[in-house]
Length: 282
View 1 (cartoon, one colour):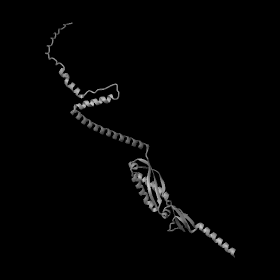
View 2: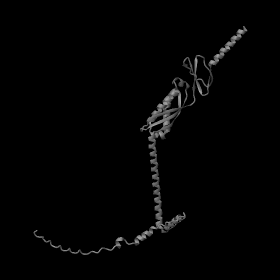
View 3: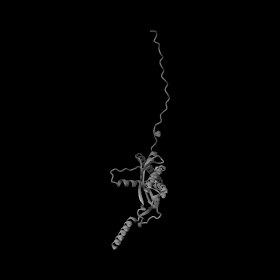
View 4: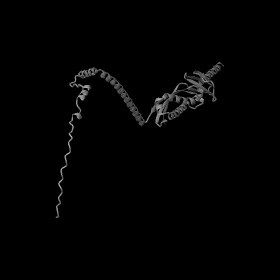
């Protein structure tokens, strides 16, 4: 009798152990458990930790709640200004409602990936090349809004969208390089012209001061001679003051005044022409 009781207790204990092993589940900290009982969704989503389900009746689906980093394959499209480009991006998203992520969409990761690719193509067609290259923050926000609207119905929240790279054709790269070079050359010429204008104004002011004080020009000439001689040159060039040239110009008579005037003489009478004689009959 006691032996049969012990066997019954052992059998019951084994049955309980098998049941506990089949019913026991562990949900990790970054997961949530969605339970289906006879195919119907249970409202209580299992929190992280140890939990129990009814064996052969309940099905537990674990949903990862971590942020997922998904690269978007490079998409080729034509911008609004008719330039062919290839753009790739990366999407950061996470599940905020585990039940909706399991029930409302078959594979939420694949759905987000396809939606990101179509949205990226749409953004390329609506944007100019300059916006893709320099105004990426605005495009990232537009992509995030386009993805977040349908993803909320799947229990997914888009955390961030970033455009990684914009690939241009080689011809367009060369054209942009020539454009940038021409722009830099234009700015260099403008800067040089501005410098020449400022220098000319300063030189005009210096000329006004030197014209008022003739000794200033002589001092400047001596400074120039000292600067040239300080470099140990064997040849010394002495500039001639402009006032000396003007003095020589005033002292030298003009060519018209120094040249003798031609004498006017009366024309000589023409010589008489001898009369023609007839030769007679032959």
